[in-house]
Image (cartoon, rainbow, N blue to C red; front, side, top):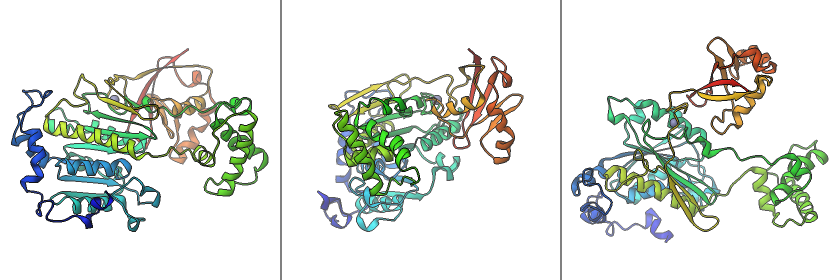
Length: 443
Ligand SMILES: [Zn+2]
């Protein structure tokens, strides 16, 4: 199998020996798109050359060239798409090679986007893949306007929120071309999701932010008193024992001696409470907060994303995200194999695509500092460096330093001294181009 994936191993005669125009290359697409299917809508889908031309001419942006990105690029080109762009700021690490199959050992240290683009172009003659090595934030609206569809294979919520806000902001009601379908794939271990956003028409990624709620921390008392899971024993060693016995050493999670020390402490505690499952690699995972990337989850989620792109480009079958229908597919592969597809509804108080401030109940006796801290944990905001103001005054600014200094004393003040009941608080975070509006109600 590996040999057939190597560009060097591709025989020019077996794939038509041309620039991708041989009839054999389009045989399966002709079969698929040359006639109506059981679910195709006769008012939307006209079988024949038109949908095939749509595939040939569509310009697609793939964001991320990692585990999902490699799969997405491969699926798109083998489905007939020929004009792709890929953005990724990372370089290839040796640990990527087990699943990011467009990369070889000789590529370690090279940028993912350019190596992936080159591999795909060699393997699929006639395909043009344009790489950009850098951040999505480097590009402006004119750049994103060139594409027909945007597909994200990212592991960062911050980048997703940024591209989502950008694509929603680009929609001009007078110009239907300005609405770019956004297909988002995501995986975490054996779990994954694919979803489609039609910016301004359907629920956006920001509406769905509470689906990515930060994992609840285990209360310290559970760690200190009665652990129930191997993770609790590891966290106990990590948070409590290290502080107690080695507080002069700075914990280095890449130092094997440190991890071994934590592992042995955790193991003895687990024995005391009869909890099985503490291992060296679990210790490493918990301490570094790592969830292993699973190749099969990436393959399934990427396949689903590319299937949606194919349906959107050709109208050959109903796609996720058609307004009023299902737009979100969840996949779970750790306890049996399970998928669930549903409609996530648009929120009228979404800070990106809604038009109404969000109501929030606050304790008038609590401090502004407590409220600012809660913004990082609230599933619907997840803001780490917020700036807060009301119509009349600046409450608190995390940046720049001069404003931080002048507004810092407010953090200790009670909310009732800073706000009126029913007043609107505007909150922004420089990372996201999003303005949150909250209406504060005192409890
Ligand atoms: Zn929204």
